[in-house]
Image 1 (cartoon, rainbow, N blue to C red):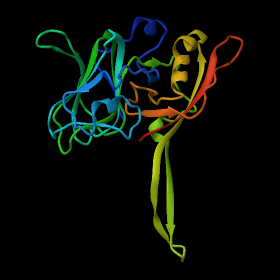
Image 2 (image 1 turned 30 degrees about the horizontal axis):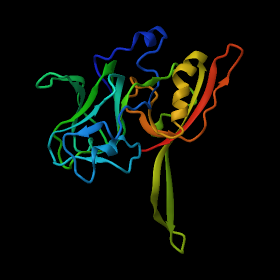
Image 3 (image 1 turned 45 degrees about the horizontal axis):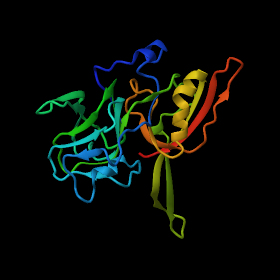
Image 4 (image 1 turned 90 degrees about the horizontal axis):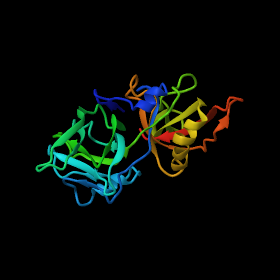
Length: 277
């Protein structure tokens, strides 16, 4: 489950001044993609690109050819938007060894492609997030190179501006992809012999303790996310630089309530989530 960070990545000045670095936890919840502004160079008619803007993972976009080139573009009719990430979930790009490139086309004739994250072959089919320096863009494009073995497909595409948490996580936290939960049924014979078991469902579960958050930072940056998380899933990576493979696509299972920790007014809360594997 990789976080792919461009080698040219630079934090915005406000984050650097606040002591926030590239290894602070990140949450990808803002998404400018909608069913009306997302398009693909080619699509199976039964699996249109509009499915990519739906956060549900049972719907997906599917290309038309094995080994062909495909591109997915989000265009913003209302003008430029600050962006610093693109994320995908429930795809087969690892299995097909499909190179993924993130960038945008300008308005020249013919259009010139500017690369934000270079060609990357994902190690598996788990959630992936591509991070680049924050900038205002009119469009963002996911280019898929020639893969093999199957037609490429993706269920979810997010693009927008990351929420960066101001405190790193240490004690009392397990990376989300290690918190695997399975619901199983066991088979036993009348004599009591073990006949094996069937995994009915598998997912990941995590608890994120947050503390010592500046109250202004909470109100200006985190509070809006908590409202949105009631209805929509999000991407979460706890140490994107040190542990880029430890990222999940999850939804909130509790109602995080911010509380004052002490007279200094700093905020603490706890997020509980489950996600896909």
